[in-house]
Amino acid sequence: MAPDFKQMTFHPSRRASVQTQKRDHFIGRVNVPLRDVTHANSTTFVVINPEREYRQGDVLTAVIVARDARGRPKTYGGDFFRAKLVSVRPREASSAGHVTDHGNGTYTVQFPLYWAGDVTVSVQLVHPSEAVRILRRIRDVPAKRGYECVFLDSQTGTREERPCFTSQPPGRPLHHLCDFSRKEANGSWFCERPDTLPCSAIAGCRRNVTEKGKLSSSRLGLASDQEMKLFRRPFVEAEPLEQENPSPIHVQVSGQPLFHHLPACSVSTPEVLGHGYWSGNVWKSSVCRVRYFSRIDTRKCLTNKTIYIQGDSTIRQWFLWLAAGHSKGSLKPGPAIVVNKESNVFVTYRSHGLPVLGSQWMNISNIRYVVDELDSIHGGPNTVIVLGLWAHFTPEPLEMGRARLHAIQTAIRRLLQRCPGTRVFVRTGTTREHKGMSFYLRGSDWLAYQITREIRQIFGPDRNVAVLDTWDMSVCQWEEDDVHPGPAMIGSQMNMLLSHICPEKVNITAIK
Image (cartoon, rainbow, N blue to C red; front, side, top):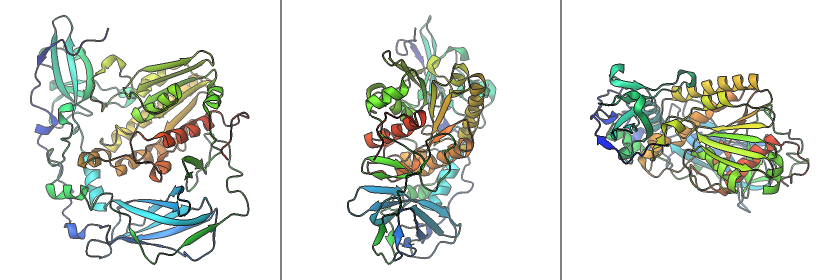
């Protein structure tokens, strides 16, 4: 039976949380005056050869010239831009641009031309390079996030809450800590040792709710007040850049269907410049043949299959979609199970293990790393594994997320040696909403993109895993950015997954 976290005697924690730790993490501090920072009002872009005759299948190129507030060209790179191509009439198509940083203050953006008609380019400065330097430095500071775990003695009613960390806190000796790290999962977890209870009395963990809204890097001693100005307007997610010499760009119809010869979706799908475009509320893939799946089509595709979904709450939306036909609902960490006896479909979801960002206590018995689940699964051709873990790792040092992904990759190989034919999918990150400064510091789109790049680099060349890349569709979506996106995004993501599971089903309605 799960312990009652409320009916216990409470022993307050020693004041040894991360906020009281003295750190000197101002090495690499950004001392650039604000007038010298890349500024959206001065930074411009130009479309190369706008007057040429473009056709579907061509690539449109733009060049960004970064400038500071005084209009002086920047001489170094590192700015983070968001670029998209949109249709003019009707305003329903959009695609993501792919930015190349030349390291000298100029950037090339390439847009594959997927549809015919008038188009326009939109470029947004998300973060100047100076802010990116701050994000990188803060991200790589270990043990800065606030977590807590509760230790319980159900017989005496003793309860102690202790701060916990994703790595050994600097200056804290091991004999003052409980070490719950899992070497096999490359998962580290340390808690301050309780006063009266053993480490084995740990019962549950959560995000430190008393720190909600207080993740100020200046309060933590990680950034100066001057540096924090770069995460306010006009330096963050500024208005679209001005285009030099704007002129209409018209794309003509190609002589042959652009997506006529796309391959079936599989782990061997080739790399391409862009991943597709939005046509209204439907994402059309340029990578492989992604089709629309009705509820009936979905049931046919998944008949006699077992689907294991594990990760953060963004991938739990996929479980909810499969379970009930919608993507909203409870985002608790699981485990959750749904069974369709008629079609013999079994779908389960659980969180990826520590770290946890939820405000509710997670029973420690329910916290299982992805590696633990993979090592316990008896798979085969009718078993599907879907993994999505990125949102909880954006605030953490990149090496932590990278190590976790490598451990998962090794566990996948063990699974496939035991159970050949098991289908494994790993999803990338997406853009998200930012309601305030703390959201930028712990969940900036730049941070999410770094995790996405790691997923691509680790699993992209792996022929045992199919990477479901959802970054582009979020960059140019018509819905508002949201870490838990709306029905258009989730529906298109599910079409992508199901097209990989059932690439050649003859009774599935094709996207026209």
